[in-house]
Amino acid sequence: MRATDTAPIFSMSDHQERLKQFLVSRNQPGETVALTADASTREYFRINWDGQTAIACVYPEPFNPDEQTYLDVTNLFLKAGLPVAQVYDFDGELGVIVQEDLGDRVVREVMSEVTVEQRSRIRNEAITLIARIQTATGLAFETNSIASRLEFDAEKLLWELNYFKQHYFTTYKKQPLSADIDAKLSEEFADLAAKLESFATVLCHRDFHAANLMIDRNDKMRIIDHQDARIGSPAYDLVSLLLDRITDLPSPEWLARKRRYFLDVRRTLGLPKIDEVEFAYEFRLQTLQRCLKAAGTFSYQSAMRGKTYFEPFILPMFRIVHRSAGNVDGFPTLIKVLRSEIDEKQDG
Image (cartoon, rainbow, N blue to C red):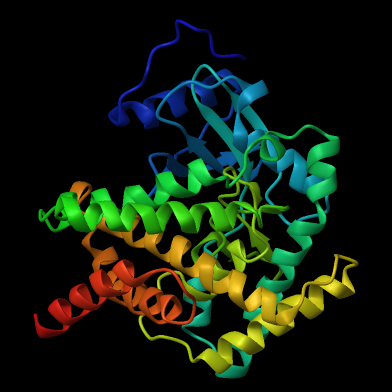
C-alpha cells in the first residue's frame, strides 16, 4: 500500500491502534508488546508474525514506500552484505514496517557486562563494520540509493552546529549567547563545515554508536537505525562510535590506536589508503562537529522531551570537543565558550 498526498498525519497516541489495524489486515493475531524507542519519534512493538516474533516500527505519519529511507537503505545494506534486519512487510498508509526480531541485546549494554578484553573485541568488530559500510559507497551510487543523494555538505553540517547552539544555550540553559559571541562562533562553525564538506566521500551510517548495534540470538553483531545513511567523512561513524555518550574521556593514545586499527581494516578491505596524520586531523575536526551536534540532541531531549538521562553526557561532549579544538587551529571562540561552560558545570 502507498501513502497518498491527502493521507492524514497521525497523533502519537494512535500508534498501537494503527498497528492493530495492520495486523488484522495481514491475519496476524496476537498481543503486541511496546518497546523503548530512546530518542525516536517512532514507536516499536514486538509482535507475533508467521509463528515467530518480529518487530513492528510504527511511524508518526504515513510514508511513500518508494521514498522511505529505512526501506531504501535496508535494501542497499542487504545488497552489500551488511548485517541489518530483514523487512517482512510494510504499509505506507498506516505507517508500519515489520522486520526481523534481533532480540534485546544492545551492544552498549553488553559492553557494560563483559571483560575489558571482550569490550575491545566487540569495539573492533564494530569498527570493522564501519569500514564495511564504506565499501558499499559505489553500490549506493550505482543503485541510486537515497543515501547516495544525501551528503554531509556544508549546509547540513552547519545546520547541525546551529542546532547545538539553539538547543543547548536557548532551549536547555535558557541563556542565549551574546550577539558578538554568537557571530564569532558562527564564523568558526562555517569554516568547520566547509572543511568537513571536502572530506565527504564515503557512505556513512550517520548514527553509528553502541546503542544502534545489537547482538542477535546467534551472537552476531547487527546494525539498526540506519535510515539516515548518507555520504560523509570516513571519520564520521568512527567519531560517533568512539565518543558518543561517553562519561570518561579516552586518552589520545587510545584514540590513536583505534584510528590506526580502522585505517588498517580499510586497507584490508581494498579501500584507498588514508595517511594517518591527515586522518588524525580529519578525525579531530569531525569530533568538533559530531560531538557538538550530540550535545545539542542531548539538550533538546532533556529540555523538550523530559529525557533527562541524556544530561550526564553533555559535559563529556564539551570536554572532548575542547580538547580536540586545542589540537587544531582556527577555533578560539569555541575554546573560550566551552571552557566557560565546563568550568560552570564543574563548579555547579
